[in-house]
Image (cartoon, one colour):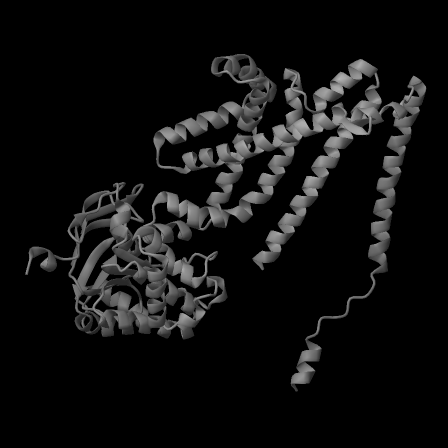
Length: 278
Length: 250
C-alpha cells in the first residue's frame, strides 16, 4: 500500500525538451547576427577612415623590461591608482553610509536634518561640480592634496547611495527584533551591533558590493583634476601617441575586466548567502 | 516592613494613549501588587496589548502616570533600559534572535546589560532552559525549533534578566493547538514560584487556574475587574457577558 502511494507521488521524469532547446538556439543566433552586423559596420567605418592600427606599439604602455627589470608602464600604474582610489573611497563610503543611515533613523532631530541635507545636496548636484567644489574650494581650506580631494569627493558621492542601501537593509529587519532587543533592556548601540546589523547584512551586502563596482567606474571622473589614475593615463597616452582607438579600447577593456570580475565574485557571494539561508 | 515592599510593583493612573485621533487607551487605572497574577482579556483591538506595551515603553503613553517599582516611567525618558531590565516580556511571535543559538539568545542580555561574566551567564541560562524543559536544544538556532519550543526559549530569555515582573502578550495565540499546553505549563510553574505576572490571553482555563484578578477591557477602557471565579460565572457587565459567550461559542 505504502509502496503504491510513494510511486504514484513521484514527480514525472524530466525528458529532453527539444522544442525548448531549439528556441534557445534561435535566440542565440539572432543575438549573434545583430552583433556581427554592428561589428561589420564599425569595421567598415574604420576602414573608410584609413585608420592606421598600431597594436605593436601597445606593449610598453603596460610594462617594459630594462636590464632584466620590469618597469610598469602608465596603464598598469593607472590601474593601481584607480584601485587605490576606489577601495579607499569605497570603505569611506560604507562608513559614511552607516553613519548617515543611523542618523536618519535616530530620534535626534539634528541628526536627521544633517543627514537629509547631505543626501539631498549630493544627489541633486552633478558629480563633476561636487569634484570642483571639493578640489578648488574645500581642499585649499582644509589643506587636502589632489589624491585625498578626489577620494573624499567620491566617498561623499557614493556614501549617499550607500546610506539608502543600508537604511533599506536596517528597515528590512523585522520590527519584532527591535522590540525584543528593547524589551531585554539593550542600549541602542548594542541593539544595532548584536541584533539589527548582523541580520541586515544579507540584505545590505549584495547591493553594497554593486555600489563598490560603480565606485570603480565613477573614479574615472577624478581625471579632470589630473589624478594619475587609469583614465588620466589614457588621456596622456593619446595626446603623446595619437593612438586614440587602441588606447581607449584597452582602457575600456581594463575597466570591463575589473568590473566583470568583481560582479562575478558578487554573484558567487550572493549564491553563497542564499545557500546558507536554506 | 518598609513602604517599598508593600507598594504595588506597577502603578498606573489616568493613563491615556491616542493614535492620531483614535483613542487607544483611555483613563486606565490599575495597580499590580508584588507576586500578583493579572490576566487581561477582551476583544481584539480593545487595547490589551497596547496597555502592557506601555509598561516597558514599547508604546509611549501621552497622559497619566505609570510607575514600575516606584520609579516613574515617562515617554522618551533617558534610562528606560534600566526599567526594561526589570520587566521581562514575552511576545506573541516569540521574536527570538534567529542568527544566534538558543544559549546565546539567553546569555546576551545578562552579559551586556547586567555585566555578568559569560560563564556565570551560561550557568544561569542553562538553569532556566532546564526549567522550561528545553536544555537539550541549547546549541540549536531558533528557526530549527517548533513554535512551542521557541516560545519556551523566549520565556527563559526574559527570565535570564531576573526581572521583577513578567509581561506576556498573547503568548499562545501564534501556536498550534498541541504546542499550547507546554507553554502554559511553564507559565503556571512560574506563577507558583511567585513571579509577578501580567498576561494578555484568551486561555480561560489558564486564567481560572492562575489569575488573582481578571481585567476585562473593551474599546481602550477597563470595563470590569473581578476574580476569575466571579468573572467567568457571573460577569457584572453586559459587554463582558457578551464577550464570554462569544468565546465559549467556539
